[in-house]
Amino acid sequence: MPKVECSIVIDQPIEKVFTYTTTPSNYINWQPWILDSQAERRISTGTRIEVISQFMGRKLDMTTQVVEYVPSKRLVAQGVPGSFFKHLVYRFEPEGESTKVTYIVEYQPRGLLQMLGPLTVSRFQREVEDSLRNLKGVLEADY
Image (cartoon, rainbow, N blue to C red):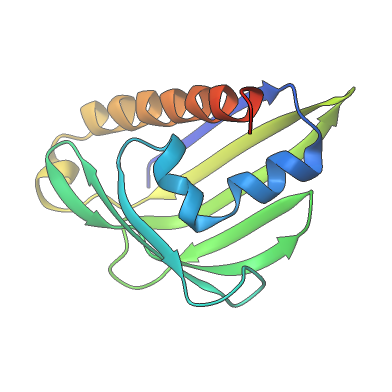
């Protein structure tokens, strides 16, 4: 199962970075492949996060359920059956007065995306790297 892991340091306090990053309604502001995202309730263990995205010309369901939620430290979610995501982790660590964000995702491509193999992995790696740079830009601006 393909896995992507990327990190970035954001010059903002950890509480601010955690809150913004883990709020589903903000996903479309920093993840260009996200078309829509919402949660059934405030994020906590057990919350289901519905995400529709477009990746390599394909519309994907990336719905997950939160299995671990530790404010200002991490959010861990499992993909629901049929989701592109299998396992997703956001980890937050202090770096002086800044915050290191690490995004780890295991996913299960199907159909054409599965047949494209390594191309899918490298493309998704670039998408995640671009998204983290977007997140840094949004949070370091006047948020």
